Image 1 (cartoon, rainbow, N blue to C red):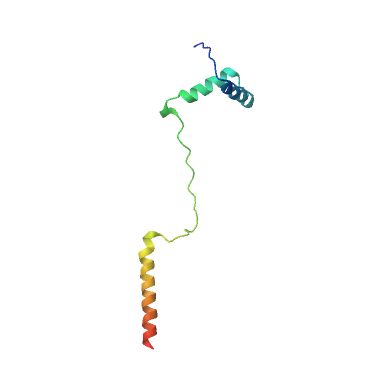
Image 2 (image 1 turned 120 degrees about the vertical axis):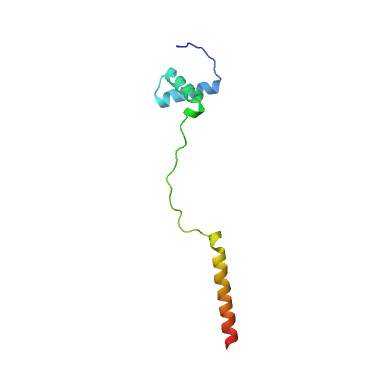
Length: 88
């Protein structure tokens, strides 16, 4: 066990005192937990929590991959209207 004495800034003291009250831990436990969390190697830290996928519903704009199909439909519609106009 390593014994140590340290001086902290006033704002850090306030944070520590609030955390002791909030978490119901002793000052020693709180300091050890905070130091462990801060000094733990990067590979030992928790990986980010992944959220499950969920549907966002129908897209508000057309799929760019379907734009050529949409253009074909418009061209066919235009051709049909033009053909029907001149057919009379």
